[in-house]
Image (cartoon, rainbow, N blue to C red; front, side, top):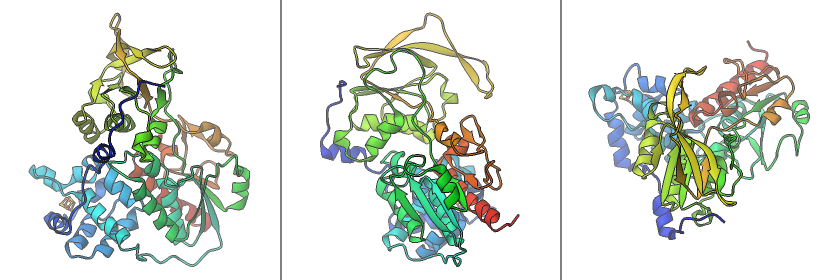
Length: 449
Ligand code: SF4
């Protein structure tokens, strides 16, 4: 057993994991909506990867038409609640709001979107869309994450029979299992799953393609197949000591936290996170909120190269996370369980193929960081064994290659979107991909160009 952090009271856990941003009240939402200038060129809409008609849905909130507001949002984005809560809005819609140019607070677009969608779910998901007549064709979807759900919802409206296969027992993919619960709760993600099911999409959970059902069977059963699988566990560093007890991947740690049984999550007294992307920050802040006394983030490049966005970085700093930039682990030490990490200081050298300056070790700069737990968050990898089992699929740098307009892979019957084509971006990108791929599939199956 690792040297665990002391357990907190239920009240402390609830406080630590309560929502970061509270919902708007009715008056608050209307007042904020009335601040919108309804700009003719709506830069906020352009900055949204799903191009939601932002001034349009805000105007409807201002006039009390909440059902219409939800419809405007869902027309562009089926994963609207998760996106409202988890999108890096500072870098997207709110970052593009014209109020920034006046040095005033941008419109709280994410919170307003959440207000409209919360209201839609609270009012029992009234029917907003009419599906086309059934066209007799069917599509199998692998993965019930944002890409798979968005693709399924759109295809159902276009008249297709849609069957989603999900490996996990609970559907929703990354929204259900991979986003810190103080941003998105499982119940939020499951509401989105219910919405997609209400359109006629069927979801089978606990089904692993290649085990319970073969890929060949899928390709024979359905007129087209969409791959919307996410990524697997974090890569490792391949340095000595990686198999010591107390060294885990970020994904499994975050999944445990998402079960919301805080008391049963094993967290070290001192935790070190390797990596500095958004997943690393989620793991770090969750460890801290579970009671870890000291949480270190170790990153081999500088703050400027850190993949985590500004909001996540601020959140981690506010939580007291310690950042070790330009630092790389070289070995893990311990007697069966991890006790300390040998680290070396780095400097940035010449640019590498990715255009980023390559970290170079500084001689004689080694030092130890004492720790009881290590969480790897170095970027997740696609399940290449599975992807390679699909006939004719082209894969490069761990990503499925698609036609950017149609989302069709090298196998004409197979389409793909989300993390498996981009190596891991935001939920909103996956939601966009899924919707666009549905139209690619529709064009293919109806012989449209
Ligand atoms: Fe409203 Fe800001 Fe978008 Fe203009 S840029 S339409 S003010 S949210």
